[in-house]
Image (cartoon, rainbow, N blue to C red):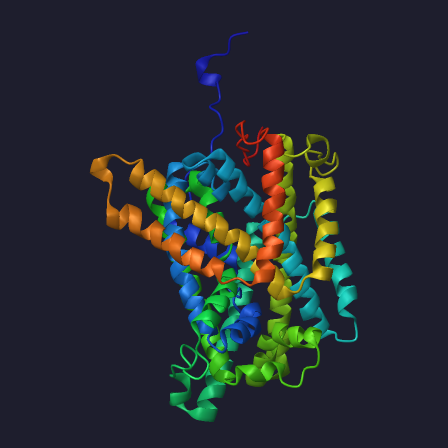
Length: 465
């Protein structure tokens, strides 16, 4: 039967309704306004009292990398991942390796969140053993995701407002505390940036490699390229602004924490054993909150960090499960297991259980610092790949009339160089664990491609049908 043309409904398409401001807010929500606070103790310890400096150096690398992500997103607006950018611009095999790095990050996010929520919960309720909290949170994340729990954007906005309010409370309390003790000179000092007696470039490099975790996740805003007004302009600007705002905002938080507790080494004084030392660094920011704002601020900040990590852990686990589902659906991984969907909730339930088990094991054998560094191991390899892909795509493959050394070559080249320097500053243990993961991916790729003779299948992470 013929249908009159006036009755034919046009296909539903994504609408470009997001403004630059919407995209920046989305990026900040992804990163979280409190991202730097859990790192405070470890970053200070590794950098020998230069946590603010490490955050600002990491910001420089992220800004150059954000430019590359924004430019690649404008070229491949439906993709939005290092996997696709590297695979399309450089080589599908290299794209798979970038995707393998991203896969490790996705798996480690819920592990990191379980570790931090368990540490924070133990800080609030010390009579409950830390090992029990690991089971509670790893199991809780898994059960929530098995029941189809979704974190709505409205909830993210509410959480961002609440977290920001508590952070403002913390910053105001810290400023008042320092003013009352030392006066205005205590609030304006170069010590958080430079301490000649402890300054070391190797320590700064190692601290920066950890502090870069503050920015991990900014690239997620590139996945909205198809829904943004003027994406060629706004995606790039949003990525850069998100990194700049996060860096300045996080740097100010850590600056006030440092001037409130200038003797950074005292966090681990009197601790016996590596576990006690690690726990003292994990909860260092809570100790600062208690000093400047009493038990009320300590509890409020602990609760906000706990809830924020729960949200990140739940969404991180479903994100990892979704990545496994996409790879299974496209036969990059065994389809029977990884492409399975639960009939009741239409979710990748087997993947969720699989990741839940890996999360429990990972949280039991790794600590917060090790997990954070492993995330940065994979993330910076992917970032370096995207910067190199941007150079090839926008400089070497661009028409000669559009090639600009200052605009098309220098920003991604600097992003790749600074990213490589940060990546090289990771400790040897991280390279052993991350290198083992990379070796597994390379062997798997060699098997799937008959010794790299066949092309890899580019996985489509968008929803199909």
